[in-house]
Amino acid sequence: MASTAKKVALITGANKGIGFEVARQLGAAGCVVVLGARNQTLGKEAAAKLIAESLDVRFVPIDVTDFASVAAAAESIGRDFGRLDILVNNAGINDPGDGPAPTAQLAAVERVLRTNFLGVLAVTQAMLPLLRKSPAGRIVNVSSGLGSLTRNASPNPSSPTFIGYSASKAALNMLTVQLARLLSDTPIKVNSAAPGYTATALNDFRGTQTIPEGAAEAVRLALLPDDGPTGTYSERTGIVPW
Image (cartoon, rainbow, N blue to C red):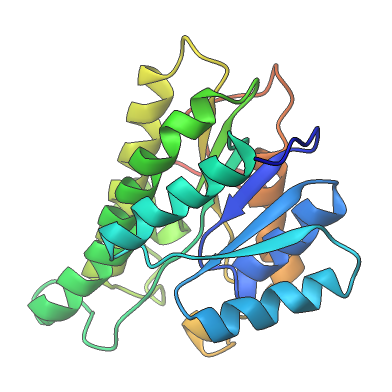
């Protein structure tokens, strides 16, 4: 087991987009980055890019929908570092069959929920024993403004309506508040980060924010000081209403 004074950070779905940028920024902040991705070729290529930038990055294969893969990743991190200081639950998908509640394909909704919520729950459960060994653990759940019940109750007429995706992010926010309450007597802080409408493959690069802008809130929450908040839901410009 390697001994390191650096913070050890796992980012899931980090081979591209916001996850890759979060990995880059945490690496630049002095963390050991464990770059998680389900595709080993793409994950190793992404890690190599960051290593070429002189960042301390290791690749770990992790498919959040494969619970054996999740367990193996936790075992690997425990063996290599003995703890985990930061978990950024970034891996997420959309599905072309998702859509408004009256017409969304049930199989599509199920796929989205399995990745975006059940996968996050599985990863968090597996990594929590390692986070408890950190002097100041941080869990960041990458949510979305589409998961806000308040915003969905009075939506902009032009805002998209995806029952599966929005429900998965609302469920993710429930995980955030429950974990924050249950871990309130520990140094672990748990928060939801909404990236905002960021130009990534998830929206065919139609977003109006840059990827560094989309990664900013997750990075801020990952590096919260000891007196930082827990159980919050925020974006780069401030608090998001639940």
